[in-house]
Length: 533
Image (cartoon, rainbow, N blue to C red):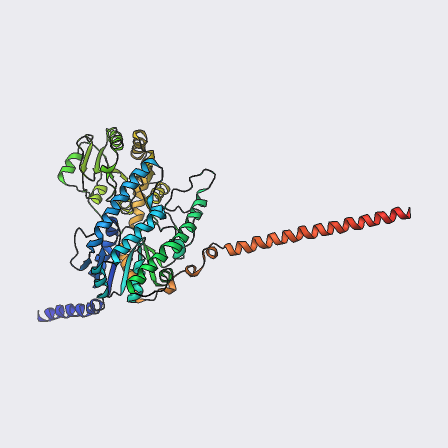
């Protein structure tokens, strides 16, 4: 017995000694959220918890407090900027909803006149805060994981701290300027961006995508980044290297919140790693008793939610009435409806509304046959994970891209808020429920989404550890250091067409000269013959 007891102690001691270096050498990691909505926090939280659980010291800089604080994660919450963020998001929400009702594809996030001032005001509000500056001057981090888009200020902070940098791309795809900033293959010939494509029937969509990529790139590099350079100079009292150079040199890895099983398949360099779905979890689909009791009356239900930033209660009364009529017309289907704000009393009888639902449990329920969503990346991934077809009604940002992804994959329908009325919404509901291809495709996507060598969060954690151990220059695309026209081979094609044009010009010129000489010789010969005769 003593030998067995000793053996157990020896094994335990060996395990402790083995683990001590990992804990002792744990990195000091900052998750830099900046100005962001609740969904951004949801996307990054699993990675933060994973790293905290493996011995790293993790800090969150965020305006969005966690609903369930993790005991091993420190949070720095700059409250002075919180109201600004909340007010701006509320204002954008109202503007987007009202604008989308009046104008198809309206989106303040694809208008730099609105986007740049919004982001810059949030950055300045954060950096001029004395609490933030004191905290920044008394802390040091080995690695900064910053949430994108529009949190590039973190790269300047990382430069001063000599910290490594990982960019986490929260949105379903990069913004248009990211392709040139990070050396990604330019696939604008087919890959949609945040817009719906060309508004003009004679202009192909890919013309619009190519134009957007270049137009946004120059707006970003000529206007937005110089403003960030000025802000960083104020923060540190000195000029740093230009932030576009820092982005290219300091960003060691890009984690993108997407997966080819539910988005478009595209070409990515080795240092860009898809990790979409970190927040998704298995569920048995059991709901609270009051919901289960409501759902017993019918064989199927649809879940409706416009996410955390969009309030259905802000919709005009006539729009709400139209939604009620469309939902009420589905006499064979119940509806669970996430309703932001005060729940109205005149809801249809087949609707159960609450301010909050356990969304993943709802989507995992065996009776859930459809999901009407605004197309937020988190919701779309949860639908893919649980195998539920979707109707996407985009409001802003990358949500139009998500809608196009759903149509491409075959698990969803794209419906614009501008086009919604009782007939179009009822038709979309019936198509989703009655056409089995959507449900079958959604279930197949679910299988693909889950089948990976490592889970999404384990993949992200593995690559994070890799960044801490290695210099990442060997994985970066050389395209980072090329001009946009070099990346698109415009120099090559300009040379080819230039040679063709010059050759054609010289050929025509020589032909004209030869023709003149031939005519001249022919004329001289004719004159001489005339004289002789």
